[in-house]
Length: 80
Image 1 (cartoon, helix red, strand yellow):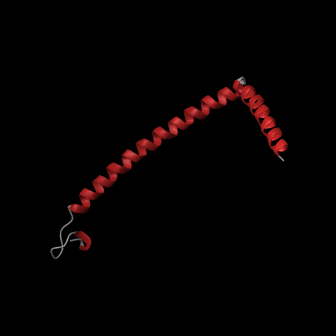
Image 2 (cartoon, rainbow, N blue to C red):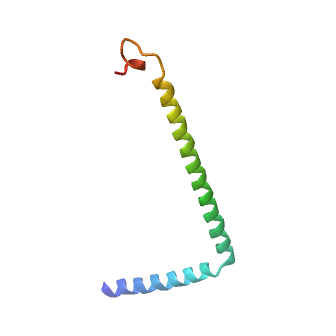
Image 3 (cartoon, rainbow, N blue to C red):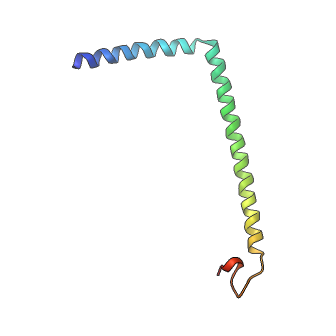
């Protein structure tokens, strides 16, 4: 069985080398990689912006909630 494992590793290595070299030298794959990278960066920037906007909305909501009138010595909606 050890010979089969060795053969599998050799075949895997050769296929990996051929695949990596062919993709690395492929203009179409390079364009795909650049476009994908740019899109991922754009999505990341949009997510960061939305996160900031949501944090600001939560902060505003919290201020509004705190400014509600107190009822029976408790905060708004029964908070102590």
